[in-house]
Image (cartoon, rainbow, N blue to C red):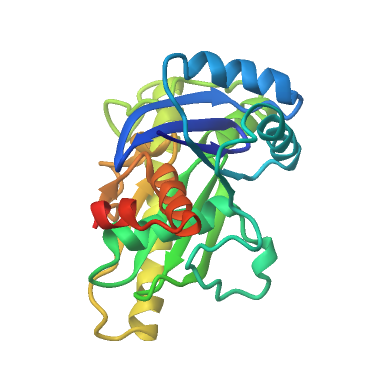
Length: 268
């Protein structure tokens, strides 16, 4: 079984693959203070009874990545391991000014989106996490760049912290856009507001893609990330919801670097 680990700023998502099938996933908090031994204890308890024969990892948190490396050296040194970083084969050309600035998760998502949804044209990945990332993928699977915006939760937290009479609310769809009380008004502004933000950015990106790639086919917009369910179904531009997009991309990259294409063949 392949263990995939996506270390984000807020949460760490783990997934176990048996062949091309995800058999289990977990979402735990990311704490940069965790040591290699603490990480192993957490992962080992989750993986109880599962036999892991490979690891594929990406991280946007340098401190956690350092400890993950130490954990692998100490507890999993006999397993083939792929960490998405310079020198790893991803098959994703980075057509941006400074490729070193691009987060590993955005590269992984680009590969997964192109593999799963990019057969007929460009694609856009909207990753609803600590930040809201819009990653643009060419018809050839190239990473073209994108847009970054504050995430849903940190925006709500910032508003509650700066406005004396406002507070954090449960992030659920209100009964109407016109809120009848403070809680519903905050929910409406957050849920419908972020949906409108995403729709506005996606439509502008699609306009540019049509100029760059005339006749290339319809752009597919893929939602992922822990907060995607809040907006999917409200946004008018999101076509697909794939919660495990990053984990699927990590499995694809592991195959590319282990000399096997079995997973990609099964996905396609």
